[in-house]
Image (cartoon, rainbow, N blue to C red; front, side):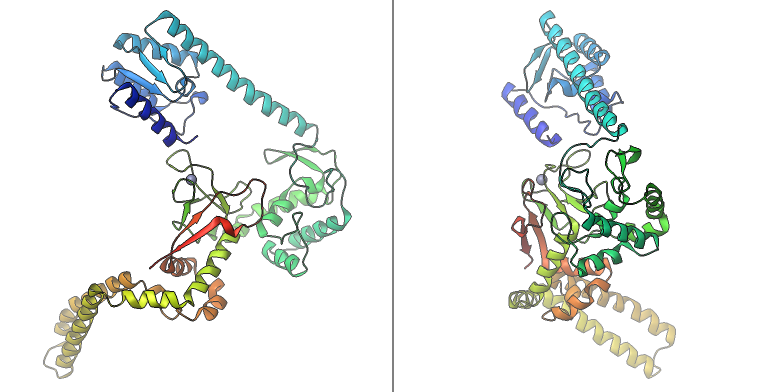
Length: 445
Ligand SMILES: [Zn+2]
């Protein structure tokens, strides 16, 4: 549940009551459970103490207090300031009555117990399973194993041994991955290997018969290993080496600011998964106002968008659109400015050439004119957006060949010159493959 939604709900409730909203307090990155200081909450208490508040609307009472101590403090502050109106979207509590106070205390205690029990139960169970080396959860069959997740599938195990060996011999994951694709070695889902998938598999304790808990190897697993545990240790050390990582951290995101969530309209942000897979997501939570429901893996989407852009560069529509914008009055104005300034520069050069002015005079006179030309060129470029596209229009096959060698900023400029944004629809549950139907490009011009 996004904080923004909660705020909207609370404001609606305040409006229903006919209350004027004097202030909104949001501690969206600090849960009431955590016991950590919540600055906005403290500020709210001060406002109540100061007598600036007549009523408090909260989305759910458990958003406000999880610690009984906090609830008691809240009750005291409200009582002292004469605030008795306390609305929540899930049942109101009148803090002015003994019953109301009783209710608030009970709710607080129940909420707290629930949250404690739940998290303790879940993590204890997972930890116990892990320490016993047991399987946890379901999901897709791991590569190298049958669907019981315990029996080795030899046809895939040879691939794992080969990849681990090549990695430890110094080969780059990317290159191993490329080779697997060439040989049409399929992943569990039948698709081609991606570097991040291969990397994650090689890092996993599973392939050496070890059980992980929160990324740490905690026990010998109940299934056999395909490679030796020592090999996993070496692989982990190798891939954690910063010298190898530089390449990976330099890999950035081509489509920043160009993707919009189909559900809520927010701009997606780049956020890798903990395994390192590059992703774009509609971010909810601290400092973000997205819905938190839209995710898309970066690699395939980027390839798809680049193809679409290259196709678009060859299209007659785009050429026409750009020609059209080149004839508007502002464009002519900046073009004239460039022509005139260029004329002045020629004149000045002539004067200098004929020794009618000296070198320093020529340089001094030239500088402001040159600046005008630069400015006018920039404005012109912004108007027509052709700078990024010069030479590429109608010539996409050449660009396609050189694409991978272009720096990211250049790639981004070309994409952004053609594409306004892509609307990203929500993924289908359990559908892991790339689904082009989710993406609607909105072209510029
Ligand atoms: Zn969204």
